[in-house]
Amino acid sequence: MHVDLPELPDVGLHVFGAALPRSRPSATAGLPDVEVSVHGVAQAPGRLAAYDRLCGFSLRDLVPPTWLHVLAFPLQTWLMARADFPFPRAGIRHVSNEMTLLHPVVVTDRVDISVHWAGVRPHRRGVVFDVVSEVSVEGQPVWRGLSTYLSPGGRVPGEPAAPLRLEIPDAAVSQQWRLPADLGRRYAAVSGDANPIHLHPLTARAFGLPRPIIHGMWTHARALAALGGVLPQRYGVRVQFAKPLMLPGRAGFAATSDAGGSRFAVLNPGGAPHLVGELRPL
Image (cartoon, rainbow, N blue to C red; front, side, top):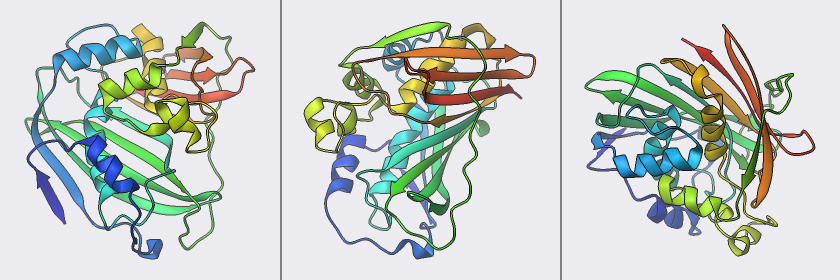
């Protein structure tokens, strides 16, 4: 089934609706066959500038690929809020992200966005499922994203596969970051992702966390910004999210780069990873 929406949906409304208790279909049949699209989305230059500043990107007309994830995220949330989505929205965790920038995108481009499910499989902690997001400009594909989420406690048939872990680069920490207590609220304001675990100690504790944690996609964006001048015009990048980054907090950035691309990591003061990634030019 294909659904065309007239505009991007309200993320906050769908997050609230998805949190309401209700009966859900069984996950044994997999995810529903549904794709959702929005056409001709105008980007907001002021919002993009605020996003760039918060994530460490320089201000320019070219948009970072993580910004295109931000534009696609409301459609992901819309899919998860549907009555035919078999997993409870509360507790879902973003565990990895891949994206491919096929062609540079500028802020004046109107973009067409589509999102669909790509599969579900068992995990040792529950169930993981994939969401594919695609962005086109004037009919030309320019960006593709694959987000993998974990639903703790879920069950589908089969045995979990052994996880494939990206390697932490053998490099010294080159940057030190200090993350203020309000960073989650500030990122929510520019991204639209107002998950309570990111916003305030009280709302984080309601979900079993001692303090709020920063969004994984802020950490992803900040890592790309830290690579700076080594970013090619077209590339693929994938990251795996590890230990949550508490707010307020500190983190270090380490990276190695050569002609084949870059490997990078965001680490806590003890050297344990919050995020590990690799980037390859197309």
